[in-house]
Image (cartoon, rainbow, N blue to C red):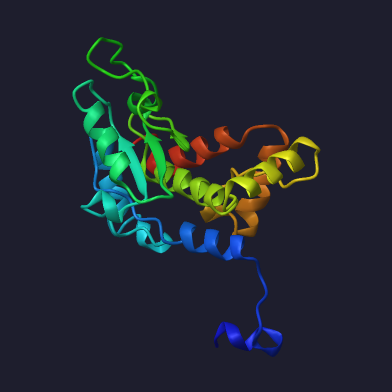
Length: 219
């Protein structure tokens, strides 16, 4: 049963912006780039257990010219910073950066002269992921949030200014990625449990409690 059988007359109407953003967010190719222990979690995310291939991201490209997502997985030293910037400059546009782990985001425990205190001093960051190191499930959640952000990006500067004016006037769409884990969205019981927790601002506590129940309090 194909999509064409569900559409009246076999026609599907949309906008160029929506179809382009849909194409971009469903075929994000990360660069093969790891710096420290967070890279091990990134490798696990691409393995069969977590399977990034579900989101069209299973191909880690060895060439930055074939990649459009840089996952900064680990601390960035002062010696590595110019290399990281060069790889970013060689990536195809449009391109996005995900700062994975507290060391990449703020220097973490390495508050010294040798480590860059936040990769956003070197490249613009689109998504920050906390943790030391973050679990593969957390990386997948950050990737889904980034996909939603990509899906709402304007195609050109004129369209960007138009959306910003609409948001300032309270009329435009507000990009607010859902906090609910993707594995909960289609389970009615878990979705209801999440909505009850959200009413009291306990989403993250619920997520941690369920993770501890599932893992016995740790790995």
